[in-house]
Amino acid sequence: SQISGDPCLTIFDPVCGCDDKTYSNSCVAFNSGVTEWTKGACQ
Image (cartoon, rainbow, N blue to C red; front, top):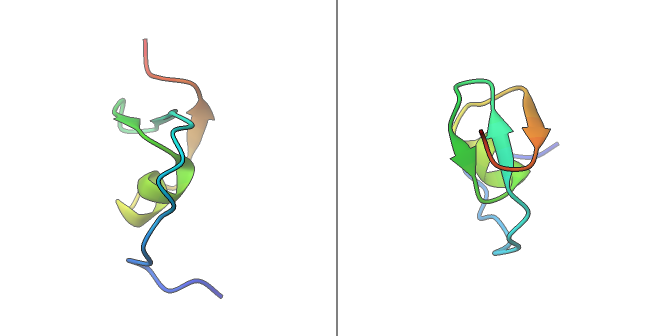
């Protein structure tokens, strides 16, 4: 299991979190406490 706060790879694969913020990748979103996201930057 992953530990919250794990360092993320610096892969730029933007996702839009359920908080309407764009994260550089799903790992960053997850570590920010976002549980759901869609691929691509927020509109």
